[in-house]
Length: 210
Image (cartoon, rainbow, N blue to C red; front, top):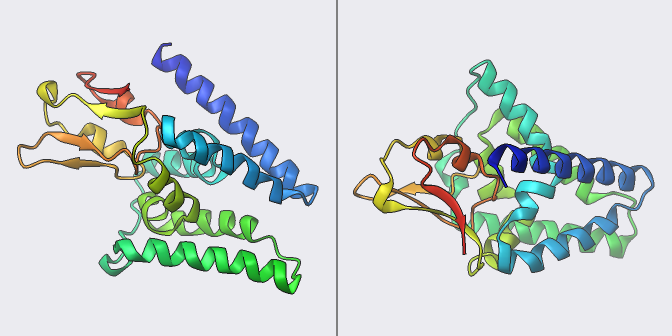
């Protein structure tokens, strides 16, 4: 399938699941979304984080924000170094789980998931998107663990990489890093499988492989 067709398919899927998410919210059945996440988590062990890049409503809402900011060259803040510590993402995950349990036990009518989505958009308006993906998102933290051994992932052909860094610039989760020889490589556990690097690469060395 050509890249243009893949991007169109991704957009259709994103819109469908965003509408579905909104429908569940309106009908007070948002807890059913965890079933979709569970399926995405199981599949991530094979196909990587397609849930993040193609289904997650938060990432879908990030896309127009990113488009507008790029269009008008609006710079967002870089997160403080202290907030980029790996242990913090697990702390946020624990807080999320504790909040979910507390709401169920105390019988408070608060939809934690909806508030997480709202919080994600608010944070991303001011701080670089990668901060949410790599440091705050509880779902991203879980998927970063389950996708470590995924069979399918985005890989960079180091032998033909020209070290231009264009893939790195467009990566929303900063999953692409630089080696000492200036060649790029991808951390599949952080990759959202969004295909933006594939589209940006001028020599087509970024590809989805087994």
